[in-house]
Image 1 (cartoon, rainbow, N blue to C red):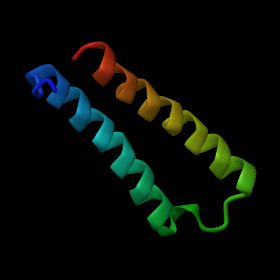
Image 2 (cartoon, rainbow, N blue to C red):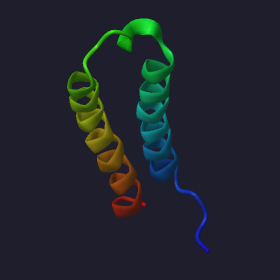
Image 3 (cartoon, helix red, strand yellow):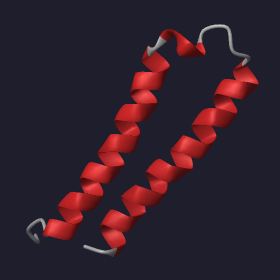
Length: 61
């Protein structure tokens, strides 16, 4: 098994940051009262960004 490269660590932390933003938003009162479709649309974009950053970790490590 390969060790963690510095770039890999950077990409993991960037992905973690997006994940934490998603969790924080879901946990906040700011989404209360929004329509389900609006919430879903917002997290679809954030979800794609999270997946992109996770993929970068594998590609560039």
